[in-house]
Length: 425
Image (tube, rainbow, N blue to C red; front, side, top):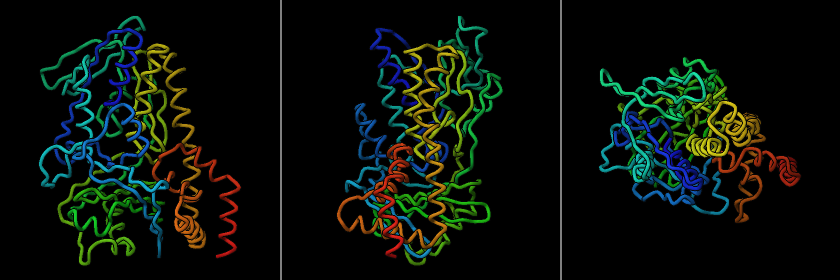
């Protein structure tokens, strides 16, 4: 939701229209722990950083936890370091809220509060820190939508020409939208598991540096993907898989021998830690629109296992363009909004599923894993990113569309290198 007012006001100005925007957001992002957080691992892709900077939004140093320049892919007995193809620290780690629940840092380090502050400065935007209790759709397109908001007996209502819902998959409002009966079906989801571990800045620099560690493993419940993400004083452990991930999966990750050796000798998980179980979408919603209402963000669709924040940016931009270029009717939003997000995200995810399934097959084969590892290491030794390195980097960072990565994986150059690697092993 924090991206939408900027797009809307700019389009209105271009068309010579005067509009007012009311943004309902009850979350206080300067709170620590899940109360102030949007339940996210807090990795901001290089592509989103570039999109924000083109709009004049540059994160102040205090909001940046760490700049990431490499990924380490951990295999069962070995692994390899994959550096940014252009040798720069471009990915940014942040806290969506004001840090973990038990953290001692002072001041405001919240990424989301910074985005909200950019909106507060815009004329024509009113921010209401209240929950939305109910949305009443008009009987026809000639009447406005009615919004009922507030707490307890102090409930108010207002009318609007358009309602944009950006409530996320973990919001109570999601079920209320389903019950409105216009055909919305939320995305299918699994529960991820996040955990914040305090180690201190010196230990993190010594043992993890500016590198995100990726570790995959298969259990009886399916394949799990784990990320160990360095912040300033904390590590964020994030596990997501083919079924819901819980505390057991986090503990299994910490007890893997190849993971434990990354930590200081004698390390034990803390008894008290900040943890959450956010929902992660692995399909798109059905009918995220009706007359005068449109749903954006991951409650509509998001990239496969990737970039929920950037998906919010893309869907917000698509919705604003659809409304100003076509209209607010159900047919307008179907033709303009859904057509755009299908091309940008939903169809692209088809290629993402293929890529991650191929990644799983490679991981399950020690031979293929080592061949790919040697190929990436050889490219790194030459001092520039080769095609294998570029494919892996973009697949795990989500920096470019999956369809482009898929096309790279089909090129004769990649297969020739792979074949040579197989026969020379």
